[in-house]
Length: 469
Image (cartoon, rainbow, N blue to C red; front, side, top):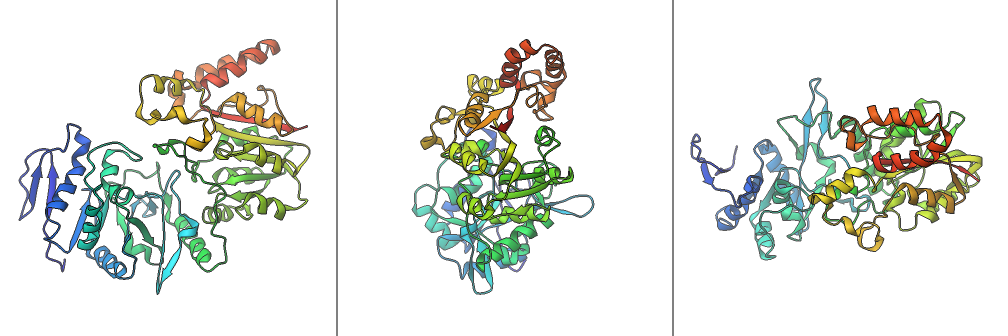
């Protein structure tokens, strides 16, 4: 490397390392996960000793190519914006997967901008296991008096909070150089997230192309709705990368030929519907994620409820799909009613939402799980940006918008728990619950009384089928 570099290693125990590597021993708090917070003190004590400050976890590889790229774009960025990095992993076949991109994290369509040959955009995941600061940027962070916030859990876990405080607490904004993305990609050397989180390079390329078209004014720089809650934990933010929801595929009647997916993400479920021989039109969460769904065969509309509705005109659909969005909307009834106009006579509506009456939710609240620290605000939309969805509330949304919920035998009899939950009875252990459900189908009266109770207690997700009245 062409730079004179000093390396400081944080450790909870003494270590003998080769060369002139300095080891700083000691945890900032009793929690062993607090170790990454130790870098803040190292930086602040040496703010005048270096031109560049690099924080990195020990499994992220930063090369001179990355540093050179950072320094080049820093010259043209506004002083409150920092060029950030994203991480990738490589599977045994050599395919790259971008582990930074997963779950509810997404590009902000209205953030794209260019400075000469470089184009930047904001990605909502500030964590990449590292960051680089110039001396000026570090001094700016130190001046806001929140750089020294100590070990704690926040929006991220404790180690991730240590790595992102520079953005979330210090009035600095992380931007990604999408025009030269390879220069800002870092290998996550353990490759441990392959098959768990992250999306392929080809999916990322579709998103970058969409961002470039937004920058040119070809695609709209708009989101369908705010996908993030006001809660201090991101668990219930709207996911952009849901796996194919098999229970939705099962619940859509075979007579359906044309589906409108309202709030379409990257299109995994919609692709599954297409594979069953149905046509799918999608109103995407935004134009960026819509590009991924479009590549899977979904016809994409403008990402705005009113504009999309007007654009569809008199087009009719056999089924409307609202997968995990209605509880995020200020007025779910208004949106449900708006698109119900497009249903054919006796058309169907499928709604999925989290079940906040699920037994594991109550158990975790009782035992003080920190993820549920502000659960009390769910249902107060002004405070949480989230409705408290239960079987009863979703059924009421349907009824009030002219949709008749179909009996649970025809809908909720489908298995709606996750593969992990199948192993645990209290989370809806399917081996036992499915047997109970099967026995109930032989007794109509028992079914009407007990099946809704079983689903509301043991089903982690609500998947409800209704028909237009």
